[in-house]
Image (cartoon, one colour):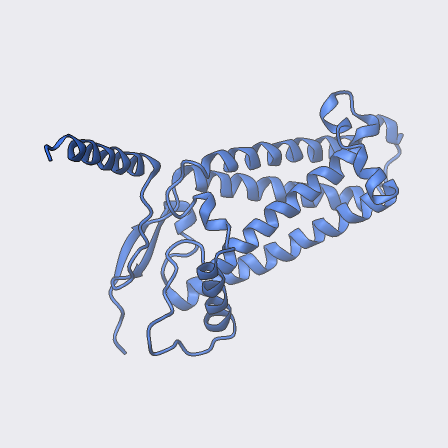
Length: 257
């Protein structure tokens, strides 16, 4: 069997990699502390609970991780305006006809494991494939639900204004118990995503051997040499091209008739 020729491509920039691992840490801490808050274990001790205050520390760690997650989300939104083509905000909006077609191709060939069409319409994704990009968009929206419901639960005991801005969530959902239920189910959706995400990354890394896992550490992936990367000119390049066009048009207007 002939081994395919590969080339190295720089995909994930340093800010994206830092965000990924910091985000993973915050979400992991939130899940563990959240489950402890939902299902507090019995602590066998001869000391009063008020003196131990361990549950208060669990809540404090949960809140710190939540604020860390919010800061990371804001940073990722900002960086998506300046990132390369693999981390740009455009990647996460698969609502064009072309992107929807690519999503179907990923489902058909990568998930349902059908054979690739002989006409070569299927193209390997160097960065996120369209299904993965859409799932990250859905996860971001789910994180907003977690933030809104979490602040709504925290609002009655909050000492500053930000959590109190989400008091309307309780009114919208009918009661604090409903808010807690949505918050709880959303956390299990995060757990399900993590399981599927880790499985697919390791599966593709084992099947293809193109550095899927290590790319989030080094930034580099390996792709087939015949893969053509889609070129998206940067805003500066677009501005330069527009300036050249305007200059050429101006010069043409100055030519004598």
